Length: 208
Image (cartoon, rainbow, N blue to C red):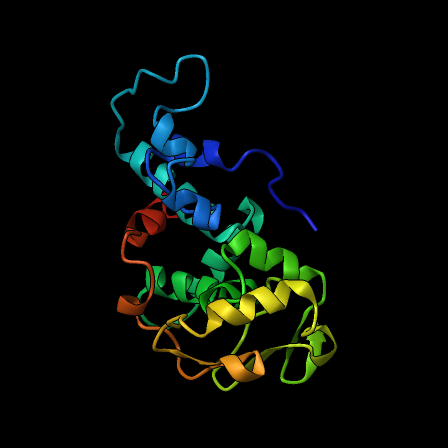
């Protein structure tokens, strides 16, 4: 399973804004972007003027990195989005939001998408009663995600149980903290997905 294994804080510095890739650490003074907001590399202090292509590229990279998807898979998601009815950019974001690792993160079982990807890959979750260890698994309306019964007493989920009580899941998801589960109630609307993305720039990048 391919994934990015280098320092993630340099990704925030490269994009020039916080991507919140390390969960709670990003909200503290330990955040590398707070201490060193310049781009990585020997000549990072100097920011050059960015043209239209550069803006499109950076937006594509930002979306891809936030969801933890590699380039080939992200391009395939875009191609799939172009075949769907409606706005292509919105369809792309909706596809990313419905990934299993993202929903585990949205439900509050993990502090970041990277952590969600890891615990899904370790086989802690089941979808509709069937164990799944595929972070990219696409959920549908009505699907139910839960921590497998045999895994609920592990130390990891004893800590999660305390935070779930105060966690606010998005409106398109329902959370059942007592049973370590949640379900997809509806497809997410654009206003229920990250608003700091300009998905039209991503569409323009791939439409060149």
